[in-house]
Image (cartoon, rainbow, N blue to C red):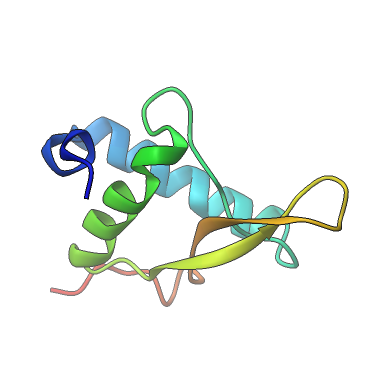
Length: 90
């Protein structure tokens, strides 16, 4: 693992913004619900770390394939479950 990724710290505002963006994308495009990055707080190379942290906090965040604009290629991305599935575990 890249040390920059392992050592990166996400503030609460960045994580909340990413979670909101993941929810908005999943609702707006259920057929292609994933995000590759959330700029500027979470670039693509840090999405796995940020989404892993959200998952450890109990959010229904999981990896998905994101279909690109040409509809022929995909990239690794992240999505979140429905709001009912996404309540953090207590």
